[in-house]
Length: 481
Figure: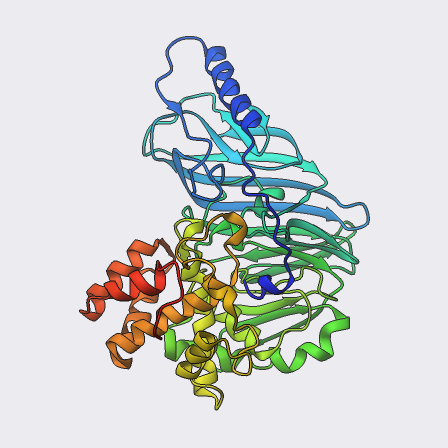
């Protein structure tokens, strides 16, 4: 994600926790267990993963490997009908488990082909399979649902979820908005492959992550089949429906490119989007092989969202992007997408790397060096970067004080300064070996701040405690740069 701090208005909301819903979910599990008669061999999975900022996000007791999502969307009415097939493995013996789904009407649920009881309580869809699930067992859950998917306001005041546009809709999910349009384990620590099949009226385009495998038109409209490929945190899933101008191609290395641009933004977007092959090739050299099966962009009209989002393989831009923003969101494909945060407290690993990539791009393309960028932010020199200012010292990048702060300047710019301090400490050869090694060894996984700090010291052979204490966790501006 990028530039949220320019457009979002901070609010005093701190979380979406719903105490009444939590109580209702527990009561629902009790009722469901009582209805079975006889002893229960398993136990209910947790209804949240206790993320430090979004404690109700995600669910315990299972690990998802694949989502098969089938959608039918009517842009004029806003009605969506969906079927999501979830393949998962039980990490404990389960008598019941939860999925995150906020809104929509659930029509039926099956587990391994058998009808399952279910109950709704807030964002929790509680499911009681006909038979308990044994630890280690693979199981398939199919949820059928319909209605008008909603958008919701983040703690920092921005909008996410399923957002209707002038000619369709755009789905954006950071941090928990994907639960507006498909049920799942919506926490970045549980990554899975996603395939999306969506039918829309004739004349509309429907875009998602990965590679377009087929496009079939008939009397009912046009059906697009998208294959996601690599594992993905659900907040990076997207669907965009509209009357886009679509361009396709390949990089010199053969990577498929697919971009969908609102016609009103096509001319202004063209120069930046033309840089995609160059930016991808540069990223290959800096960070290691590109981790996905395609690349591209979705460009909406007129600042639809107020921010850009690094949706996997195909970032979403609120309006025509510039060169700097393209670099930032493409860098996220390595850092944030392939290597995802274990919790939302680890956001600096996403944004710090993507912001530092902008500094490196500038350095390699006759702009300010990374050292000049670092000095400019330390001195608050807006001639070097117009986002330099005292707000980057508001809190340590590894410890945002609440969920409304996870997209604030320290998580971007001071986090990039942390990476530059490592570079200063260990030298360029060791630093870039660290960056490429981190991207390779954590490829398609999730990682925490502790994972990174431990890896950095082991990989470089340097004691970096001063960097962590002063720049990553220090509460005030360091006395010297």
